[in-house]
Length: 491
Image (cartoon, rainbow, N blue to C red; front, side, top):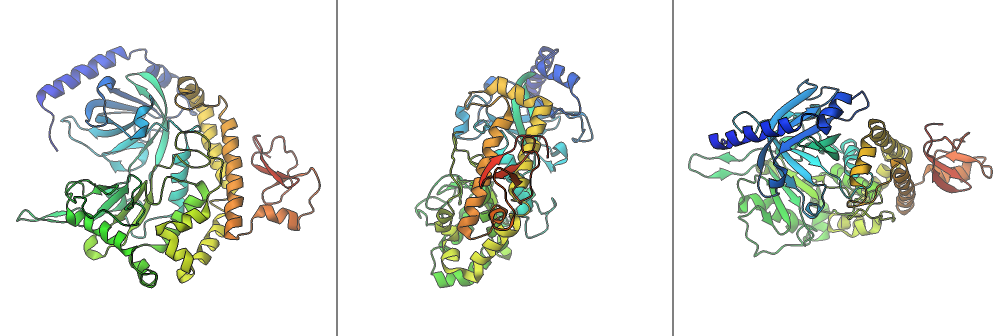
């Protein structure tokens, strides 16, 4: 890594000193002074914000105030950093996401364990600008992290997704809104092997990590343009995330072979798919899509990785960018439709397994959905996750500040987040029922009519238990065969 020149360091020092003086009595200082046990962590990014772009990193500092002291055991933690914008279409919004790389005194990247998540030198401040509840992507990853782990040991507990903490961000001391600070899907998280540099100047590629970036035949596993050069960091709609220092034919060949495998005969595919994919990981990916209707995927917004191609090429699936989920559209509008299970089955990734029911694949899918529908993916479980985040936003005052700062820019927000959460809860209850019916899986809702002494106008929880006071019950309520969402604080 290159060191900053003396002139750049001097300029940075002057910028930081000037900004710090200007921040005395700032929004950030006032809110840190008033913080209590309900406050979200406060993050102050000091930089020349007018000079920030997506293409080039610029210098700055980042300070974290966290009453729980989860970063280096400090309530206040401060470090230099490099910063740039991140995203593509989201760059059009006033509320932008940031890529943050902590640096040491000499300007070199340095690993920092932010919020106790893990040691890393690359972090994301996610703006969630088109999400009307500001939690869809985090909620999806929370569920995914319980759905699936890496099938091999890693330094991070076999985690196959990001962790994140909701924060309130300030730019040069001025309030900027509700963000989620997360780690990244990268080589270190997934335990991928580094490339070896040989004495003769050659390189041995080991671990590989690709991300589907756009809708192409290659990202849909239908084939690829063989004339596309293989010496760049992008190829047929895929990005080479690792080893990005060595974009070459050897780095791209495992992905080409993987796509080629999907063009083989049905019989060959059925006999050999376990040599190319992890069935448990594949099933978990289907569960996630069914439950959340995370639509901008298969295989766009999805990572494929292999630990070491010299010891076998078996790809692990990791999802990404899940704002388009839970009844939400890519532009923040409502997508009030359940998951189209048949559309998913027609995708190249799943088609042969579902049409042939190889290794009783469909039976396994139904069994998983049935089991998870009583636990992790149950309506009650998902509604509780929504309520917990909503309560944290409300108690901290973060939601009111977010509403005042960003309502209508770019999407409308409700002053009371529970009004918007009610839509998401109702969508999930309907989606859960729809997917269950399509898969042929019985649900607790159907069991009420079949086995309970149901009385007209009486209210019941989703498991059939009578609700004595529907006016204060918090959860899904069934009355006269119809579902609604309780908005109270408990039974």
